[in-house]
Image 1: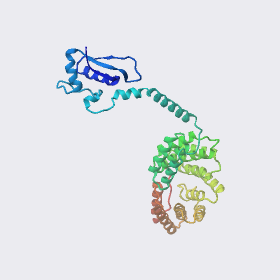
Image 2: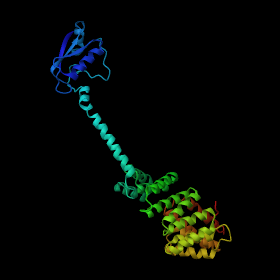
Image 3: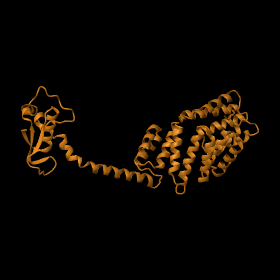
Image 4: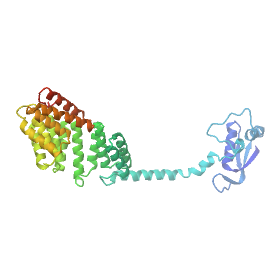
Length: 374
């Protein structure tokens, strides 16, 4: 065997050997001193040897172009003499870094375990991990940019997947976009992540909002279950009774609806919702035995006065009561006023808008409006 070059770097010598082997030349490395100071360093030198008959060709491959030589695969990096410029060989870099691989893997495993423990045992809470994201989501929702609000709340949940508040707020935004199935899923997560004993009011609110969403979907039985649970958790909130009463009304159970609306008037006499809902029922119920036009007119007027005549739905209810008592001219006037309010307020509730338009047409034809239950 003939020595064609000596190297002081093991890695560089190995590259040269691989270069020759890939060209079909037998090549071996012979160390002049086996004692090394560290990876890739050979203080005594390493000799690259090839058969004497291949020495000339090997020299041409290493130090000059050889016309029969096939380019190396991408995984090989030629020594710096071939490239004509100094670059650090890949294997040399790998030798330096490979010792860090076990350390890096251990770090990743530890980080994964810490995160898993956090997710499993972090205390349940009603606060956002990222207050800034929460505020940005709320601000976007106030501007009615619900798609952007959903993105902010989703980002907050990436940071803290156990934030009941983020799920609740995202559920509100999704309900506004009429993505009811996902809204229900978010409210369900909020319910599961909220401790009812420590956060009873927030727990009740999640049931309440899920119930409203179920009602929008026409799933009245599920809505009733949630409103009942909300009342059990927070019997002082009049809105739970108002929403349950409205659900009974939509299911065609006038007696239970009337009971709930009267309860709302009793516990919240300064709010419009009890007077308004009960007035609407008495003015528009399909069955004559339930209707009471005079009482409806009294209740609707009370609601309008409480709202200082600024709530179009209260004025619309007054129109229904007026039509039920034969005051069609006044009913037309107030129905038109209610529709104008809906336009000004940019009301998007299609059911309410359709109801207002249908009622106005009925009054113009000297007919009272009947809220037929479906």
